[in-house]
Image: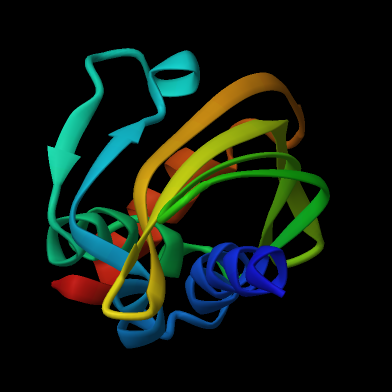
Length: 148
């Protein structure tokens, strides 16, 4: 039962991202989240608020026509009011008929706060990308035109 609620919180994070439902994305995160995409993007992991994470994602993802995240092979480990979850993730990013795909695994930590499982840690372990690897630049350029 708890495992299903935990997986649902994680699934809603990515569902909200794909649907650009930023309120849903924020609703499954704790007040502060350690976000670590360094295996793909470099830099340092950072502790961000849900609003800061949404601002980051909303400044890039809407440049694509659509995105689609597929998650599988969830392994949930419960420790009282905390949970560690490992799973496989694949993210397709589309512009027209072109696609850019990122594959990897995720490590996510959640904490049960006031009866609700909230994400406190999200780490992507980047494996590979495929498809049109110039699409991220196109997405940023398209967003720049949309915002001006």
